Image 1 (spheres, rainbow over the protein chains, first blue to last red):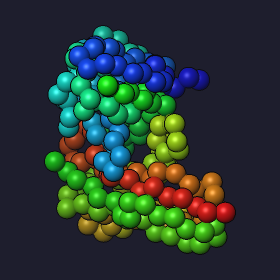
Image 2: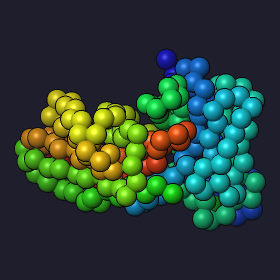
Image 3: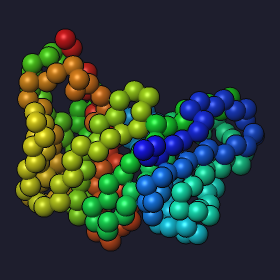
Image 4: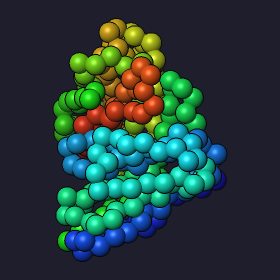
Length: 114
Length: 111
């Protein structure tokens, strides 16, 4: 049982480059989300989706795009990377039981933007 | 924006000691969760509390949700080196579809 799979594990980009962080889950979860984790700031929500074809912005959406064409996949795109986007990124999914949301996290992508 | 402040930010204690970490907010939450995160991994859910005043125990860990549903605490009895990690609280607002995470407490248990 793979759960939530994120790729790549590590990535180094130059300022201005673009890339896509991949996230896939095999638990048939409706809800998927992307967080970034920075020291002393906990996890901050970037974008989330409550089902295929539906996405919405979280707390820190600027500089990131998402799409949800299938239930399983929720990629995060950086169109023009900036040093401020250096962070650890986590994808998460849940059943979305409407009040008792239990998030399952991937193992993260450590991104450095030079 | 709902904010969750955790204290202390860092805690280092000897194995066998007891400790308490706190999660505080000015906002009211419908439920509150605690996660533990180890280096190089994503957070893993430990417990969810949903009723004001609720106390849940998970072996040596005791979780409490404040009566007003604005705060929570995690108490660890007789800490072990395996308890080392980053502890995160997360609150779910009423009518919200997303969790708000706290700032985290990094716990180190010294053998």
